[in-house]
Length: 387
Length: 52
Image 1 (cartoon, rainbow over the protein chains, first blue to last red):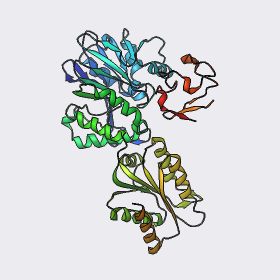
Image 2 (cartoon, one colour; image 1 turned 60 degrees about the vertical axis):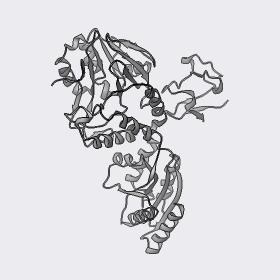
Image 3 (cartoon, chains in turn purple, yellow; image 1 turned 45 degrees about the horizontal axis):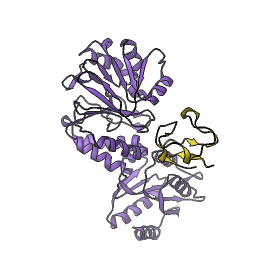
Image 4 (cartoon, chains in turn brown, orange; image 1 turned 120 degrees about the vertical axis):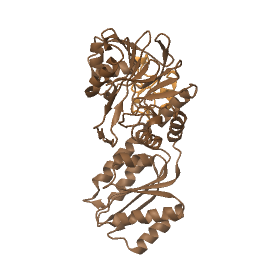
């Protein structure tokens, strides 16, 4: 397996995870890559590694350019094991290498691996690592999306090594955004942002502010394709996503036992459509929560429906709400709904979750057994008055 | 004195405890923390805290 040259003397040397479909609960239909980068200069530098099971692939790609034992610097931008899993092997082989990381990176790595024999240098925002003809400037980006995250900018080549920011879960033998359908890249970047980064919109805003002063020709993220054509487009997308800007759209997420909650869902959809909203229906039986979350990113309304089963909402709905709460989307309006037979607790439970998640709840509606045409018409009218 | 919570990671600053690692003595009110003080858990700035 060979390295892929990105710019003269700078190579992609990562690993391709063709098989992975579940990334801690995130459905990765297209697999993923763990990108690592090799810089050949007076100091030979490796930026990040791969998951542990792809480190041989990384070492093989490095070996196609240089003997891995000659690596002088290993930069660890993020402790999470999809990027650091290969570090123990790399540090064992590159005996003279200095590991460069953020202060929180050093602490985190020591909790993952035996780092006692590693030569570790910590850096902060503004610090510069001289590699010879080139250099890397570091910007700490705490909580985008772990405490230890940082990115590196190489001014001489105008490359941003952005780690998880701007990443996408795509396995492909293409390496650059002009070799792959750009719509898919942006769609996967959006899914990645929604599922991994959404909670940290304010931190992303700060990172973008720092990055706005940089002249960037290439963004080299730690997952997926490298940007060299759509650099502006991906940065603009991050600006939009991190600003919580929503469209005139409604997302209706529900599960149903006997079709009654589904009838309510479609009545709500009717009302939204009549008021000129784009709508999206997501039955939790047929849609993965990590795909639904992507749509949360730019909707004004999120409606969540569940019938009552044994005095509770359905487990699929509880699972979705737990996931949603963790990702803390802001400035969204919400509607809770559901059909019930006797206790009818599900709607209040949904409401509780949505209000804990700081949604502005505009309507809450439960209907007994099978909603009649009149019931559904009333529901529609109630919603239409709000829109 | 009031406790403050980091909205990003959930860490709670308790003035009665202070933050010894950052040289902040017990009894230091949140308002009196230095401007460059950061969350000891996740590293974000002081302005990311809310009253608990």
